[in-house]
Structure formats: C-alpha cells, structure tokens
Amino acid sequence: MANPDIELEKRVETTPEYFGRLYELNHDRIFNYILYTTRDIELAFDLTSEMYFKVLRALPKYEYRGVSFASWLYSVASREISTFYRRQKRSRTINMPSLSYSDEIEEIRLAVNHEMPYSVI
Image (cartoon, rainbow, N blue to C red; front, side, top):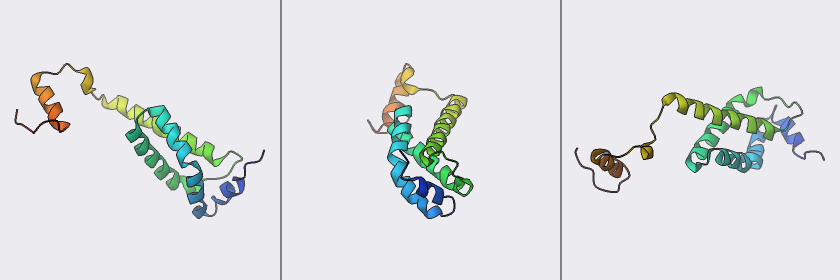
C-alpha cells in the first residue's frame, strides 16, 4: 500500500511550507515515542521541541530517498534522546531522593519545593 503522503514528503525538499503539514501529521507520534522512551512528560516536551528545531535547521538538506519523512523524524528523535542521556551521564548529577537528608538538606528541599517559607541556614 502506497503512502499517501509521499508527494508531500517529496515536495518538502523544494517547498519548506509543506513542513507544517508533515509536522501536524507526525508530531503526536514523535512526542509519544519520546515520552514512552523517557517516561518524563516535561523532558518529552523539551526534547520534542529541540528535535523539531534541529529538523527545521536541517530541512534545506533534506532529500527524499524513498524512506518516509516520519522515519527521518524518528531517527532525529532517537539521536536527541541519546544525546540528552549522554550529557546527563557526563554531568554526574546527584539524584536528591537517593540521599539521606540531614536536617539542613531537608530544609532546603522543602524550601525549593515551596513546602515551607524560606529560611536562612
């Protein structure tokens, strides 16, 4: 069965205005893929946004090669997810819930989460 959007995908090479329609057709699928992979809705919004920004920058280089535009989007999304986790690994962030809180750390955590008024330690 032929993809009804093939003509649209071919036209986006020469007419970037067609990207809007392809964005509408694919956004939810790509967002859900990123959400499923990361299990974090805020991160999924951020990575989806960053991914589409990169796609728009790369659009002038896009060339239809018989593979669906959605496949290209999934590959860009996959690279974006990998890049995010690679950077996280390098930054060596500390997961606060895994710490045993001293009274001072607990007070800071509560203040940051607006669970109590700020206080000077």
